[in-house]
Image 1 (spheres, rainbow, N blue to C red):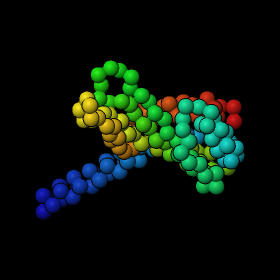
Image 2 (image 1 turned 60 degrees about the horizontal axis):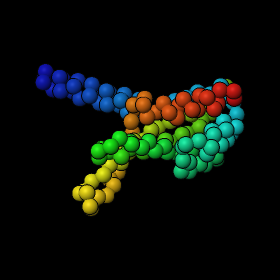
Image 3 (image 1 turned 135 degrees about the horizontal axis):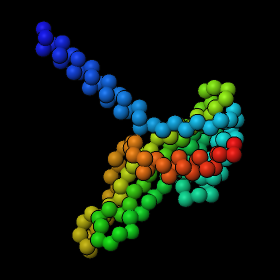
Image 4 (image 1 turned 135 degrees about the vertical axis):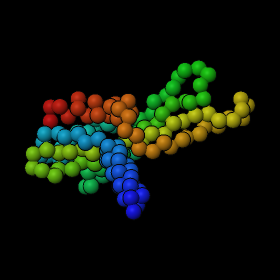
Length: 148
């Protein structure tokens, strides 16, 4: 009976820590404005004029998908760079703030094969909570949306 209780407790603990980690992979940015459409339009226009590539945008649902390619220009490396995909969801849950939910997906690009017969390989690593991949977009959004 005690083994059963300990096993149940351990299972509940592991489940709760796994769910807590999954929730931390989404960054939330709050913008003090009740005009979700204007925040969406300003963000989209700044993304188009920046180094970010806009993959898709839907104003009606408040969704933007963009990506950023960071090349690794060091010599004699198999890793050629990172491709970071961002999903942005604009939500106006309260009358005061617009929330931007940001998910960051990391893909590494590397070379495989031999010298005369090589090809590129994209390794999708999934959602990443690492600040070095999230901060480029979050820092830009803070600058772009600072004046509202």
